[in-house]
Amino acid sequence: MSIYPTELERLEPDQLRITWSDGERRLYTVSELRKSCPCATCRDERQAAAEAPKQVLPVVDLAATQPLRVDQMAPVGNYAYGLTFSDGHDTGIYTFELLRELGSPDGG
Image (spheres, rainbow, N blue to C red):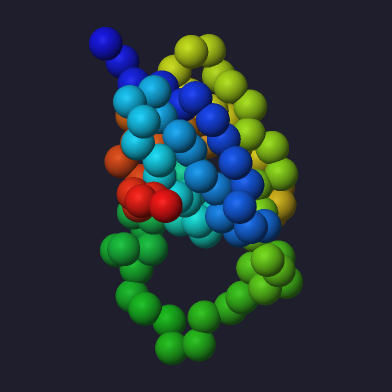
């Protein structure tokens, strides 16, 4: 039997809660979701960043200084959600399995 979301809530502009079919509730920050984007481009960027020498003074663009939000969360079949972030990124498909691994348990 597979576990699936039964409720999505936006608690704060930068925080979501998902209630799962087994009753577990998990909290997610938008920055955690964005940093964990499973799309090929983001995976490649994370790999390149891990292998590149660290910059003394990294360059930060204007978009990176703005608060990050999830603007849309739409079902993809019966197995995932597609998220659209306020920075314009919208290519990641977050499977239920991945979402269940992310976040932290919400006991309240």
